[in-house]
Each structure stands twice: as C-alpha cells, then as structure tokens.
Length: 322
Image (cartoon, rainbow, N blue to C red; front, top):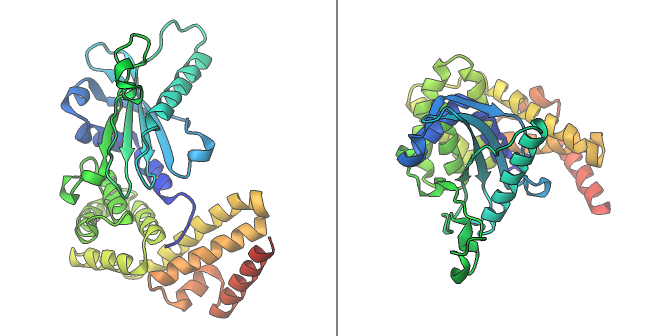
C-alpha cells in the first residue's frame, strides 16, 4: 500500500469543501431533530483549519456557516473527520478546544461582538473499528460529578461510517463515491462498495468536470489499496458500461503530479531533490501495483525500469546513513 501523504484527508477536503456536497451529506446523515433546524441552501464554507498540527495525520476539519431555519441567525457547522486506528475517548476534549479556537477566531474578526455564535460539532468517523464512546462531554467526568453546575455540557453529532452498508450511503454523487471508496480503503464491504461506487461514477462522468473528479477518486484508490482492488474497480466500471480505454496514461500522469507536489512539500524538510525523488519512487510503485506497463510508466515519469531500481537503491542507502 502506497504511503502518499494524507490521502484520506485530501479526499475528504476535496469533496466536502464543496458546500453543496457537504449540505447533501449532512442532510442525509444527521438526525431529523438536527437537520430540520437549518436552511441548507445557505450553507457556505469558511476557510481555515483548527486541528492541532501534530494530529493532521489522523484528523481533518471543515467549518461552514448556515442559517438557523427558525431565527435566520447564522450558526457554525464544524465537521471533524477522524480516522485513527481506534476511536479516541478524548476526542471530545480536543473537539471542545477546536470549538474554542473557532470562537476566538470569530472574536478576532469582530472584536465588537457581544455574543458567541453557536457551533454544531459533527464527527465524521472512518476507521477499522466502530465508534464505542459517548458523544457527551460530561461523560468524561466521574459519574457523581456530571450533574454539577460547573461541569461543561455539550454533545457532538456522530456520523459513524463504520456502521454503514454500501447501499446506505447518502449525500451527493461525489460524497457517496468518497464514502464508498473510504469503506474500501479500510477493508469493509470491498466488492459491494466498489460495485456501487462504479454505478455512481457513471453519473459523475456525465457531469461537468466529472472526468477530473473521476481521476481524483482513481488516484485515491490506487494510493490506499493494492493493484488487485484497483483492477476489481476497473472491472466494475466496465461491467456498468464504462471502458477506461486510453485514459490509463492520463491516470499515470495524474499520479505523478500528485507525487511531485508532495515531493516539493517534503523537499522543504529534507531537501527538495530527495523529496521529489522519494515521491517519484512511491508513484511508480503505485502504478506497478495497478498493473500499468513499464512503457506507460516511462512515458509518464521518464524512468526506465533500470533507472528506477537504481534510484530506489540510492534512496535506501541514503536513508541508512541518515
């Protein structure tokens, strides 16, 4: 499995930064008591992130503003994407801290404000194990103290993706495909999820910009799973009437671009050339896992099989001396 930097977070942000996709997901997944309280046509994305720097490997977040249906007042909708290897009971404490950061940012932007804007915290959990912790902040305290007036009280909404069957995914087309491929990434309902993702992909391809979105999903799948799973997805696409044909070259170039961008970012830390070389090796390994022929890889990356092996050996030697 390739280790291209933060694939789950990048897919989450790419898909749900689209306010229409986020509104569709939240309307489909939140309880009736919550979703009925808002005018979802007013949902807009607010730029920024509030997650701790050292936790961005396992968390990502998106902040929206939406009008309350009853009062017309603006409310913040905070969507925290969590994908640690196991559910964290202390997530509630971090979530409260993130909400405090949002309120502080609001106060900086509007120093004259006299009231805090309400926040609806929503945890979107995707991982290998189901969520098994309370969503009530007060439950972090001893039971005898939970009713004390000075114990903070709030609860987050939970979208536990580990409990979903493929046919139960909701939201817009891109949101559904993202949820299905994340199921596959974590090894759940692989065949059924790939088949349903293929069906939604047919609709995506017909939409404006759908081809570029499709490449994003294909790159994600090749990054988080092996070649056999990618091949199964291709077969599902063909079974539903979509032949990739000559697009494999474009797909290879897309993978390369992803890797080079990450390499440039890593280059700030470990030297630009070494970072780009490491990224290129990982890209080639991802292409090989998906069954791409060497002539396609060479055309996309400029590496022959021999030069690729030499580059791998050079990086391995460099790592051992570090």
